[in-house]
Image (cartoon, rainbow, N blue to C red):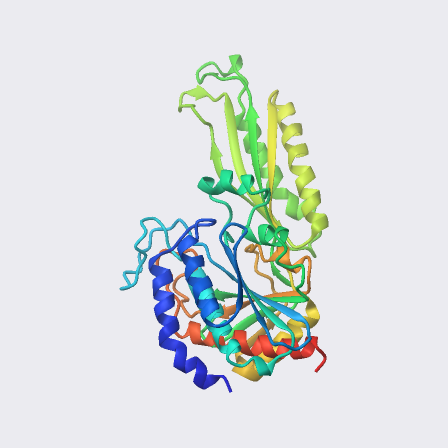
Length: 405
């Protein structure tokens, strides 16, 4: 039913995609993108709300018949990456790039909105198309603006929720492109889709001095060395082997010091990822305890700051199975992977999934040479019509299941 319509708008969608790719915008500065989205949704006859969570856009497609409300989400922000693809529609904004494919997400969801607006007779209830800012997190330039608007979280999903985007929603489906998966295929986690992500920043303070006379100083570096080993032991010695948990230390520094001095201070930052709230709480409590204990043993003091990040994306198991069946009917069972192996990457879609049933899943974008966030990443063009097709079929069929038709 929809194939001819999708083919008819394919060139139109590719023009939108190339335009969005040329003009990437970071979180909470997606003004041009949101204006384009709002105008397109209005042209499709949707009820449109703008300025949600500063730059977010919500389009509502009402069938005119009673039924459930299904939400579909696309993220809008780009990354601070200098594009190296060399394509003829490369980013015109220095140091900014859609290296995570959010330009494809916006385009595919716009295409789905247009197709479904042409066929309101095929579903009952409502479909809410949510275009969300700042999935990649708040950039420093936006911090003051976001706090002034009354939001104290991280990614844009929480801000959208705070502004009521989920208040009338019964379920959500969130698609994200994945270059390691071939075009025309999807991967669906049965339950654990993406991990939580929290950040720690630890400073160990001693007493600086001359490197030739360490007995007159208090060296924080040995304390940090011991702390590194202790932190890396948490997943294997304090977390059950049946739980997924990743701990990483990303930076290590002795600010202001030189090679022939005993540093006054040593600092490290890192993060931890898991799917368990219990594990997450345990690590959040243990890192400062361990840091303070080791610092004290080395005659130093410790200061730890834990910055809560994104919640895990936990799929509704029943919906994941239903989505797998729907996609198998559309794409063929050989192109659908229902997996129990989670991704340890993080996504703020977990904020939605913690409140209403839903599924976060991966759509193949066919660039296995370049991972997401790579400056050479460029999705296969067939990703877009495939994504529109998947959005349309999953929305229609999921609503049928939700409405018990």
